[in-house]
Image 1 (cartoon, rainbow, N blue to C red):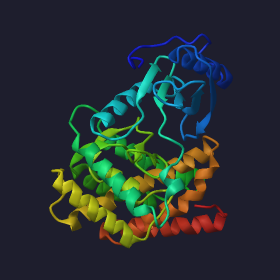
Image 2: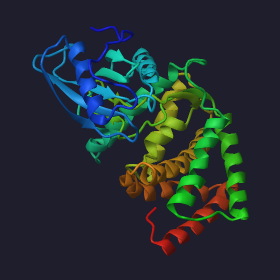
Image 3: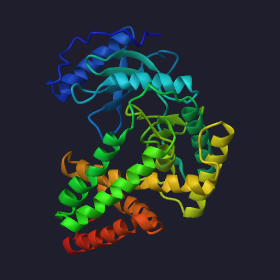
Length: 355
């Protein structure tokens, strides 16, 4: 097996300014070197909301003990492969099934990885499969959090959490809805953001995947396979469970959400994780963490549409909006945000914009 710390040198230009075709040529040269110059075929493997591209590599003869591998193209300066390599190792140490790095050229942004298959949770989820798949995901999450230690990953601190919240006003409200917030509306957001951040920052800190949901979990053996983890941080304990149970791409009724949340809480307590002693306190943290994530996601989806030319995410906005609106109606401190959301829904109707 290749040493992931070693760098191969592609034969084609892989500079940051190289176009997609030049980068693909360079990526194939990197793969050829990693495979010992055996013949192989490549095909697109998945889409990504970032600049990264993934290709499935099929060697003429199995390589690294597998029939297929994954090649990642993460073009500098837009992407940095080093966090991916680091977090992949952390997940493996925690007993979580993540791609192994077989070969790397981090300078040029190329990795060769093990292939976790073609079936995402989103592809496989239905009434018959959901219980098994979610319990596997919960068990893997507990193992990941149990392995946490300070000083290893970047901090999910107030600056980063707040920067994410600002995406809501900047991209969802201003750009997507075309609405200029009145002074009173902006004051409502500021008060809400302060309350939400106070809750988020008071939660126990663990390793946070940051996008632990149905598009980034693969049906695999062992299950699940975990992808898209390069932005992992050390932060609020409830964050990844919110990503999983209040998924932007698939929703379950609240009774089912509660059942899975209780099962997580019981497993987390048994593993010695610092969850609140009472489930009601944990559930409040879960919901308030959800408010931060849902505001962020609405902003990110709007940015993907209007800045990055990826309008497909707009179709998932109503699901995220419903999570947010429902939670805000339950807590006195969040009801002013609920009123603002309802006002923005009126803006949406008047301008015929889809949430």
